[in-house]
Image (tube, protein in one colour):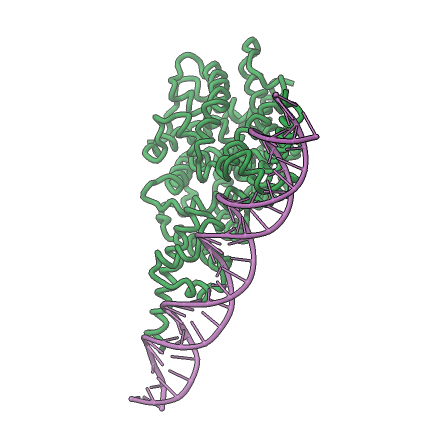
Length: 219
Length: 219
DNA sequence: GTACATTTAAAATGTACGTTCAAATCACGC
DNA sequence: GCGTGATTTGAACGTACATTTTAAATGTAC
């Protein structure tokens, strides 16, 4: 068919996306320049316009591309399915996988940076990401916590506990600069196992304590 | 002395800072323009150069100003001191105050935005903030958790638990766009008390569970 | 009230960047 | 090899903006 042309064009497109992911992650939407992206991709500035219309179009494509690449990087062990095992074990596994995705230095850092920027100035790309990727993950974790909390727990409690677990995981990524300055000796990237162990123990203990009759302390 | 001039000059300076805090928070360092800042402050562009040297100088001054303003906004009930009360009660109070600072819609939102931007691209301003404001807060919270965990807990455990509490609080601010998209019905800004209650209960239960002989589950 | 220093206003300058465009190059069917 | 449409290229355009310059205004001291 048109394999020669198409693959060549698709190739520059891919190079542009590859370069753009990095530049957008490093510099943000405003800070990123098409010239820099084109330079890194060994392409002409005008090719960005040709392939993606304009800077915004490129960003949208970049976010989708990054999202896809991250999904590909997921190992099969992170998939759902094993509803047979004890919820305690499933929690540990979920937390470990989550933290690994966030902190493992072998994973590219750009996705977390893009996401962090979306937290400050959300774009339509975030809506899609939540709908298409995050929601399912949250549901999976919520199911584990529902099991742990027992049948008497309200959906409200399940939700809040789920968020507490997520919060502990994402913290070491989102607030890394603060953690690094408060505790220079703690290097999360190298201690994923230790942190995962703590988050799991902490959360399991919390859930066990919450499970029984709710203890209302204080006023 | 030179009061007429000085106060007038100081007044312009203050107006510039006030405007700059907002613009930097909204648009980020790169997105903010001196012209817009000057316009909002009813001042001339050149006045930014006169008072702060250049854009970077203005940013540094802005961050310090924001920091100071936030410190002023703290009620007296957020101070340390009451080491007499039960640590459970102190935790509840600390968490509530923390969440209020982060989420209360009556508080200006710009500080959190400036801070979020520092999480992506730290500047020297962050070092100062951590050293001069955050460290003490963390120590205060760590002390509460040390009390709760009892004398057998390692400093490592205290640290991790402290971070778990902080993580749960900051999450509702840092990841607000995600929470809003996952659970549109949850409106953290209006439910500070409920969230504070959950974080406190969750963390107290966790700490109580961790306090005894460490239960190692799983492998 | 006149000379000097400080502060503000307005315009000018230079640069960086997104976008556009016409020409050049390429891949392919004929 | 030649025409056709898809890509790629290099240059140019216009705009936005940080910074600088210049001039006026304002305050201070004699």
